[in-house]
Image 1 (cartoon, rainbow, N blue to C red):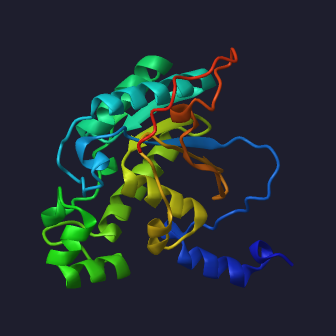
Image 2 (image 1 turned 90 degrees about the horizontal axis):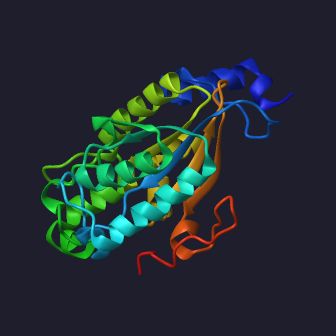
Length: 252
């Protein structure tokens, strides 16, 4: 008997899942799914310097705008994007606007897709924040309930981001949706897809303007199809006509 067919195992799994949803299996044949294309925004002055960028409403750099355009061209070539949903922060919204223009899909914003509020760490490097707040940094790295001074915990971020995901899946069932957001929200969605704990976020790398794709099925199953795909930034993907995308725009 498989774990999914054992009532006791199903009850245990249900108890462990947010909302009591029993996950299905990734070993499945073709079937209609809702596809989320998770796009991190393009480069900003803070991402280029690897500093905490949370609720500060910073713009894209010139390179970031080029990265957004490259991602938009790739997504338009798919021909199946039904909607674009974005964080309201300027760096994400500028990226999303490029995608909406290229694909012709409707653009909407969702406040719950905004980045973590990093509080007093905003604009600081990881090293500098850790040197000034060593105990707080240690706690933050160890516990999803811990928050930066004056900021927001990963647990609080997950609560709002997963609520946004649930709304998206309900409103766009069977469609392909581009979600333009930030590192923490994108990783949070991926953790749900993989049934992974919050600590798994520290083991993922997400480059600026990277794409990650997840398929969601009506029985609760989810399949991560790609992670941190930046082929559109390196000239390694092709349009449907077979033309190469622009040259490398990847963040160094």
